Amino acid sequence: KAGVTQTPRYLIKTRGQQVTLSCSPISGHRSVSWYQQTPGQGLQFLFEYFSETQRNKGNFPGRFSGRQFSNSRSEMNVSTLELGDSALYLCASSLGDGRDNGYTFGSGTRLTVV
Amino acid sequence: GNSVTQMEGPVTLSEEAFLTINCTYTATGYPSLFWYVQYPGEGLQLLLKATKADDKGSNKGFEATYRKETTSFHLEKGSVQVSDSAVYFCALSNGGKLIFGQGTELSVKP
Image (cartoon, rainbow over all chains, first blue to last red; front, side, top):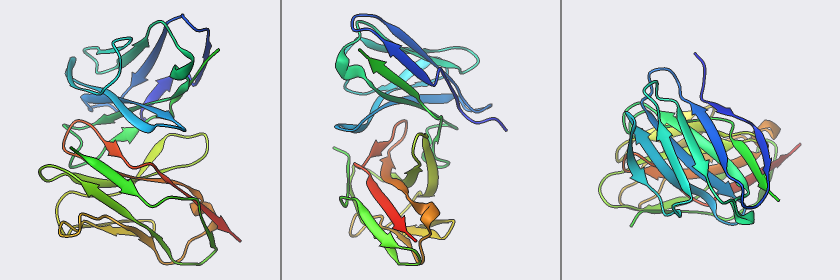
């Protein structure tokens, strides 16, 4: 079956702009979570959505937001981009809360802010 | 709070050497534990998992045992290959999100 699909793979944006990233989970997975990966901070949790509701949230400013649609696809939005937002953004999907079966990750979206 | 600590890398080994990557954790409750692997330019792949104390996760020759008494989940492989070169992440989950260690880069030389 198809894995977790993230689009686009690469993005270059200018400081101050906004960006929207998309994630399509594995069919049947209702939980979608987002992570930011940078060389300095490593992998950090952004937020998790389950059945269109935000269930968990990490410690990121309000410029980072997300949503989930009825088909479980999720989008993440970053407004007023800063240079420090340059990172690999990873989406993961899971059955339930992921503790039993783990989380399946997409290949990520590489965002560069110039 | 919850946290994961991994041994620092990079780790450089010769092919067929024994591998150990140490991982310890701090957590409330009874988390599930995971090892993920990341190859260059790719996302994370689940390598193995354990959901309760004394469980052993295994996959592709890699093993790790959930040790509650020492709060550890060390990754081992008896004979590494060049193709195992990657970054390895230990992680825990209490539900809904993963908390990762800083990652350990492994380089295997022929």
